Length: 195
Image 1 (tube, helix red, strand yellow):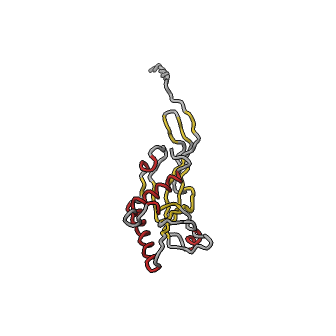
Image 2 (cartoon, helix red, strand yellow):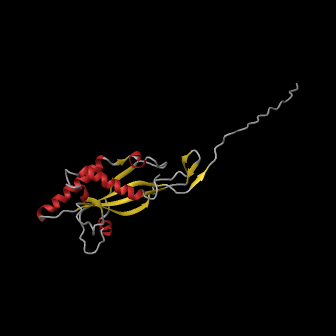
């Protein structure tokens, strides 16, 4: 079931995908790719920051879902997750920018090659599972600075992605009984036709 951990599960999934795609070719160690806030990235080389969770307005829920032959689940909620991905390097200032751009280019390449996460790969057990899209966003400059509103931290070039839909199934369930016996009475009426 896609329970309340679906948001954390998706963040973990994205980190694992980026580690597989970027290590060791672009980044040496998988431990330097992780979830973090831009003002507290420690020794990460690539930071993934979840900055917004909202209802996926373009997806309509279809009411109750069948969990098994005796149980219906209440309507799930479909969410849109917005991530900011930032590269961090240290060392010689002459090469820092190039290194960061190379890392971001590899991220773009990966999500361009694999823009859909199959429902079976992410959560095969949920009755509400659907394929998930990973879309590159282009927020306006003021929106980028709004997201990057950390005191004493200068803005860095970052990528913005939307991941949709993330399903959180309802914890409420309803038992249903199956029809096991049916009795049909069909009556015939006769009419006398006179000429």
